[in-house]
Length: 259
Image (cartoon, rainbow, N blue to C red; front, top):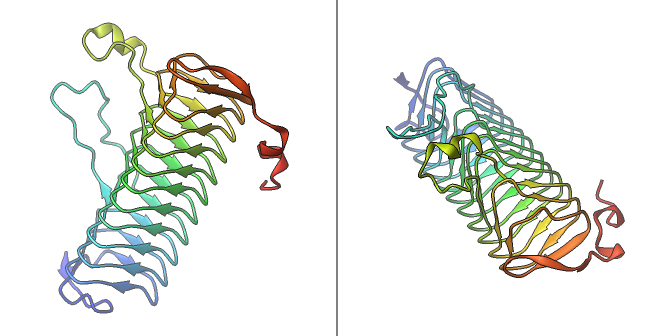
């Protein structure tokens, strides 16, 4: 790599093999590696690191100390598979990425997404357009997030999960994928994340156990512990979560005119 002047970025290290669009501003002390592509009219703040091959669309803002395209780490005892063949990280047009966020290599973000400060988006994650990933949210590997979802502050989306379109995940929600709590090899046969179907809503501080499906337009009350699948349009509350009622017609996704 070589030093290059792009906007005010005279102290930044920018590879001669990187492609940077017109009117894109690069802050101080950034590192932009080989084969990175950044579109036009972007704002890359101070101390940002963009790793090899990452793709950033047009009109994207990336705030200070964020890392894009980070390679995953593997502990010696990790049960996760090697990911040497991961594609570059991709960030779509008109995204906003907050300060100290980490977007891993192999992550793919659609257009118009907000990733707030301190959030983590792991490898093999896809996020649909207009979704909000809140402050300090963690999305683990091999997760699919639909479009126009809201994942609020400090929620945790476990690996191998699927969150469909228009879902709402409240602050401090916890999901899990290992019923065996990691002590015997039996667990390796049963890893399974959670599924939240279209329009599903999970209240603050709820816990969803491995393999559970929350049905279309269903609602889990705050603090609930969900141990069984939740049928569509059903409200469950409590520990363990039990039937409480049916989502009123006026509250259902189909009545909102959002599609």
